Length: 129
Length: 328
Image 1 (cartoon, rainbow over the protein chains, first blue to last red):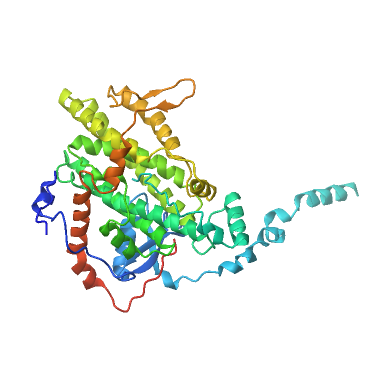
Image 2 (image 1 turned 60 degrees about the horizontal axis):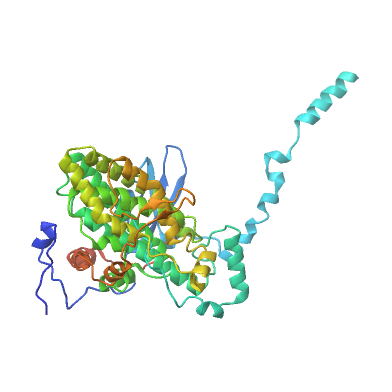
């Protein structure tokens, strides 16, 4: 086995005497990993909590810490939620076409109701009497 | 930070012929309409494989990219610069987390990606196999390597895979601080004493070639790069991005009275294109295949981190906890 160690410009790395060649490379068991949590951030007081991404963590406490470091270290945050990824329920992909007709439902919108011209007409008609 | 590493996978195209033509056409139509692909949407096996490879290499580049600059944290000149460098290095590691998440949504577990990094099976950007000799090197890295990375990432953020685009948007916002911080450091040295000027010029000379390598060799037209372009996986050619870099940054280097160590570099005022000297693509290939000045050190340090942190991980692990693929 090669007993040479890494010589680095960084004295801390040289002092660690890391071997240049190793017999054993650490390998993880696949899926031997932490649970994932989804992170929701509130950027301003009174604002919505918006999904910003995920973190891997062994428990809720550490998930919150990672979420704060990962998604809250820039800009402003006033609140943060986490939820285990497997607690998120979503509409099945094959059903999302149910939203296709939504924009056509004009009767749910302000623009579908024309009032002013009728009020004006009424006033005009009554003045003429 | 990131570089356009060889994302070439010659097998692409062959497998594509086996996909369901109807699904393939619907997939292509969706991309052509400018819609994004989400993790649960149908996608061709080649698209999935190519994206995993690309995002994974990008994630590794962030985590390894933290090392050359990280070595300067303890020796940063002054408290303010130390704080800023720590923030930058933390950002790079944070970028790796975002990108591993995006790659995970395509079905490759994070642990498998780390395994492949440690064995050398999957690559990271070549530039990080070079040492940061002086403080000026960290300034040049933060300015110009991050500038190159921004060009690359802004381009890729317009791609078709939604989780990758979302990660890149967040990353690009943070990179803009890195760029300005690096520029500030370069300007400080370039407008300083003759010794400081010489130091930053030498660092620029050392990093110029790796920066040219950063965008990857000129693209060769092929069936697979045509497919990747059509799928909006590859959003610009390596040379287009290199040209953009010349346009934006060479004038900024020159106005500081610094020089670029390439006598052939010049802009053709008629075509608007820059010509540049051969940056030694053989060296690029040698370093990618393990024979660079720092390849061994980078992987040894990464290995040390995994070995030294193992007990913490084991202490925290809950045998009953079940992994779920993150949403995005």
